[in-house]
Length: 269
Ligand SMILES: [Cu+2]
Image (cartoon, rainbow, N blue to C red; front, side):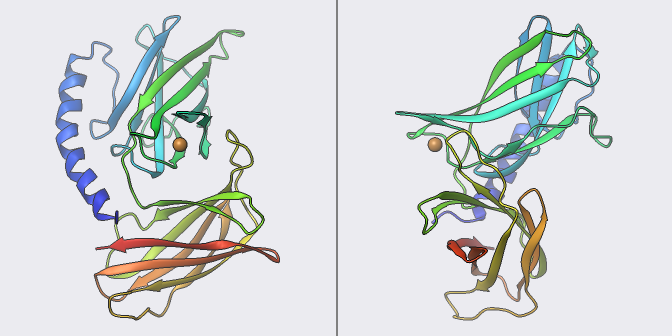
């Protein structure tokens, strides 16, 4: 079974890659400032405009901030409209996943445009992921820049796709904790409905019964807080790990009178 230890491993890999990224950026003649600890996913240039994408760690199944930079002739493009769609090409079909485009202002702390994506499957035998990106520069009406950045998605246990009793498919993502500690942890889950292969609107009216359970010792914990909706399909609560070890986060999900499903995440730390 894949556990959060996979994420720790990504952390180690990240350290190694940071060095590689730093070396690359010294070759970069643009002189643009990029947070050196970011992981470069890729870039493309079309019609003189260069679009680069970054993440905080190498991508795995689950929720990730995706950062974009846009420049033309070494000059940053102000207030571009950036639209992107994560797409997985599988043998017989393609599908997207939940995501949100960045606003047209740079994140003030980072100086990049920040959106997010949830990757629902790993790259590999099943298929390959890319981000289809369109950039519209409002200073040049009618000029849209299109490109594709291929991304590699590692396996993780942070996403569950499940069928409701109605036959509809949903995606539940464990956003937090991504680095569990003994004691009280922030708990964040995101719930999306697969309306079509390309459209995953957030589910904003769900209720969660939530219980952490340690199967090997057959006990739970107290002081947990069931996640409640905060915004855009993201639900916030608390999870209490009263010891380290193998935990299951057990969710029983309803929407009104409808039972959507029972979803468990395994965490081992
Ligand atoms: Cu897929």
